Image (cartoon, rainbow over all chains, first blue to last red):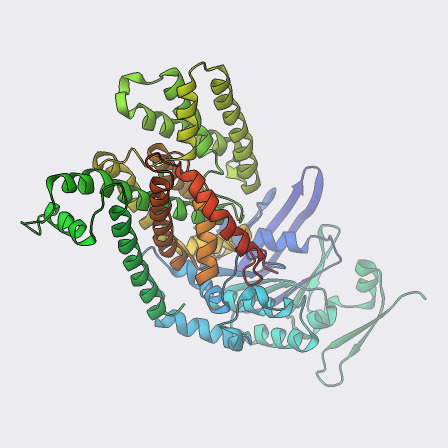
Length: 254
Length: 346
């Protein structure tokens, strides 16, 4: 449904992305992995049109995303970015309700449907018990989950996550991945934790030095050779005895 | 906040505003009872045929005190909603409606009328016209400076506002320095500190309708204002067309602030403090921040203007001094409270 064709991006003379081409199929959970500075976040920002590529095209349903009205695009793509600074304080409920913004015209009020969606989103993201708390007083992980609830309330077809498990404790990392995995929508996530990527993603895009290094299923991509080339890590690849998913372990030369 | 609490608060504040306005009309060198005030009001509105008010009382109430109190309420409400909107626009808690250069631009206009007799062809409207013109020209320059490659950057908007304000203040000061007329200099000082003494029914229409228009527009766009508080990136992913919405806010808020400044001078502090007070009371959701700010701002300025009239009677204190003297201690108290963080988040 989403296609990225020959995307390049540079700031001044610095090449941040170089000729990336890939497509994302409906309903898939696609992970973008790669070392710091390899251009993962930039790629995501171009997908949700926050940054304008230097060359190349991103299409959604075969239509250049440039031609989507802002509101329409927000109904198609929702985003949980790495860090969302919130000026002034909102209750969790009010914040999640903001996810309904793309569906609202000037005189529209929040109706029963919106309240139901907001409550369901909070329940899914496990923040329903926080609904009347003020956002500013929450912990980093709780904030992240509130932002996820806000994105869920947006009911978009594609959910973009930029390092979603950042700030989360181990339980909530897996809880969040379980939750988004079960959503009937397309997920594109930049991930740092390769074991999480291996366990949950249908497909992985590996980025290295501003370019797409390779793509494929976790089994195809996460090999000792790739990990050495891309992350400069000695790694072993085994199977998790319980889930039968890939499991990676790492060691340095010493 | 729950709907019934919101409705209750709105009703309580409307009652408070009406009571404050009645009281403000009562206060002055000629004593007047509340009953007379309402009788005069209703008879002027044609709802009452007989009144116990004397002709003199009737004139004082209807021609002098009423317009002034009503203007105070409009100016207070207008500055407060402008401040709330600007704080969301630039995502900065120290912003006030004058941050885009409105007051310094208006000062240049007003000073050139008072000292240099500019626009004398416009007669009594020269001062308001020049102040409004100055305000709008200043905002346009700030806006153009902040626009790079067709996009408005918030930090450039803030800094351009500061730079232009400095230049314009320098021009005002230069005119003041070069002027030989002592009376003129005092008149400029007086104007810059703000006063509602010139209020007449004939001059209230424009501020009132501009306020009404901008109030409605901001109320209808509360979702966008809320989204702006989550930062550009998130606001855009929520479907806000940032560039268009920013221009929209700049145009209408500058228009309202320009109109208000042109009839009242640049009354400080209201536009900064009231939105913060409101957020402290009821949170940051602009759905409630806009109407509550308007009401509390109106009440605050009605009282401030009343104090300005009586504190050194028969002379008048500029209202800007009152708003600062009453507002600052309160603001400092808020500053020291832990429960309200002024948008710091942590």
